[in-house]
Image 1 (cartoon, rainbow, N blue to C red):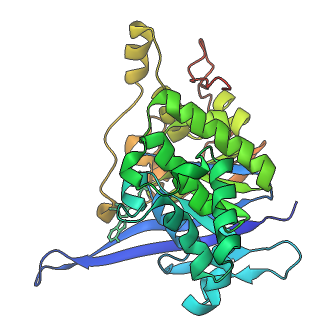
Image 2 (image 1 turned 135 degrees about the horizontal axis):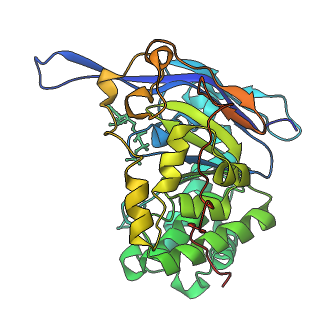
Length: 345
Ligand SMILES: Nc1ncnc2c1ncn2[C@@H]1O[C@H](COP(=O)(O)OP(=O)(O)OP(=O)(O)O)[C@@H](O)[C@H]1O
């Protein structure tokens, strides 16, 4: 199927000085990232803190320019648009189609604005509605996310964390987008509230015909919501697989480590698992040569220290590891189910 959005060989380097006269430091947050999302798909992007997930999301919505590569959006019934080639003005209409939801609704919602104005703002910016029509559209989308019409006059502090996230979702959906990028959208919420918001996102996906890119460090959440998972490490995509394949038969040693970090009850198994995890994430400014993961990999050989593996197809999976065909890695369901489940409300 033709992708709704593709990211091809995207790199992003940040340059900054520590202090006025400090040396110029560069940091490669994204290195040659390639992925795509099909219409109606939920693609999860996972990896530890600092691996470049948010930078990827911000690069897609052009909140910042990329250093290299391109992002192409294929709107239904329209020629493909290379977003990375557009200036701010040319990008504006496509910002309606591609919306972001953020982790912390308290800092992403203006505390001095009423909920009505928060949700109405994108419609006003794009001059899409006013007067009675504006009011109806805002009330309608708020009702869809479970916020009653009579609460529209209140300020964000009057709502709970879960309700504030619902308001953030309403603000994203009010423009009738095609693609929603949810950046750690449920990470700040209690587990029971997470389940409610995840179920809401699932329902809204069907109702609005949405496609999601779901950025998360929580594989339990990802297993619940995603059709496919991209695993990132130090700004690189190391694995891209259908969710079930990833959890049952990981192909990259780093994915195995992530799966091992899923909560398990038995302390003896927990100790056994901990032994297979080596080392800390290197600082991005001192990126290892060869395979980015070799400093922590229990299978690393000389080749891995010098030669960077390309992303290639092994079974249903795309994986960047020289030895992907031969590794026998443990899935999350090895000797006991290790994933969380979220009951339907
Ligand atoms: N504006 C910036 N200037 C300099 N460095 C930045 C900037 N934005 C991000 N970085 C760095 O780029 C790297 C990737 O950051 P990013 O926020 O994309 O990671 P992440 O995977 O989303 O992590 P987290 O889950 O903690 O948000 C980090 O080392 C971060 O410090």
